[in-house]
Image (cartoon, rainbow, N blue to C red; front, side):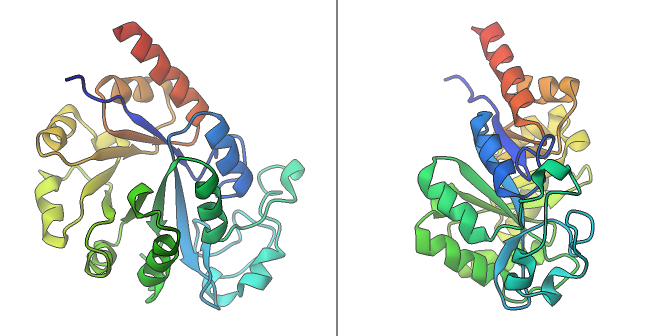
Length: 250
């Protein structure tokens, strides 16, 4: 049986061309042919799960302050596009609910990174899981985090949802390590996705996805090795390269 070709995951949406973690970035990623979307979730002061990477809103919006110190109503009024380009001044910080609505209209996969490494959101796992369960989208969701204690908590709350351990280092046999907290897949910084790790993950039937892969040569290398997935700011480029590799192999 032939191995499946790599899936393309859009990192914070189509972040190379649109404001990261906004609805337009997600919609354009799907138009570009991405198989999945990767995004980051935190909680507002009033407990609403919102999609934003940094713990403070200063870098990506025209506002200032900590996500967990602002209500959703306050965040919803802030421009989340102008810092990328003035033409996107109408972009806003989405709720997780907005992306789940989009999932019900499309067949894409969703990687939710739980952003709880700096701010200890005690209710983050439960809040996200409840939102996903209400839509019955569990089988299209991957929950990832650099906080592996958080992934352990996810597993205690949900016995079957896919969880992915994020890591930056060249860990030895990481598929063995993640058994201790019952994670099911691996998301690694792309330079450590060496052939031994890719092949080891395949032998151990552990999905391995690499982030954040933007360079043509790196995309070609990883897709050629049929890594399970590449997480990229430019899904259009990645899809084009994958198509080229598939055509060459036929």
